[in-house]
Image (cartoon, rainbow, N blue to C red; front, top):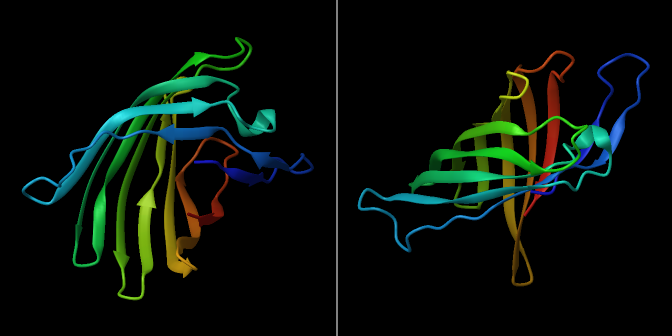
Amino acid sequence: ILPVIYAASPVPGGNNTAGVGDIVQSFFFSPKAPTRGGWIWGVGPVFLYPSATDRALGAEKLGLGPTAVVLKQEHGWTYGLLLNHIWSVAGPSSRDEVNATFIQPFLTYTTKTFTTFGINTETTYDWEHQQGTVPINWFAQQLLKIGKLPIAFQLGVRYYAEKPEGGPDWGLRFATT
């Protein structure tokens, strides 16, 4: 995940910030076939790369930890859970340590025309500061083919059910895969 971020200042008259955030990359080791019940699962490592273009958009720490996913697909529906935990292992001592749990339950429905509607939450609990962030995301995605290349475009809105003091109330998301 390479986040491109525009963050409005949490205080009136403050500076807005835009740029690239820290990259999070997961690797999953998974059986070739789903379980007898149709469940697909995987486990592996997750990495946090200090790639932010502005101090306000990243931790400036290298991090790693475990990740896991479990999901099921049937009759156009996909549902499941992704989770990970990242600890910082290197970076400036002047910056806070990373010690965060990420939990993402998800539910989507894909139509016969490859339009997907979904809802998820990307809950993060910061153990270092003992605070949670709970954005609830609603989105629509369309899969297209450009030549032989499949490409998906996603647009969504986000409401923050829980956030740190000064955090945003809502957000927008555009993604392409």
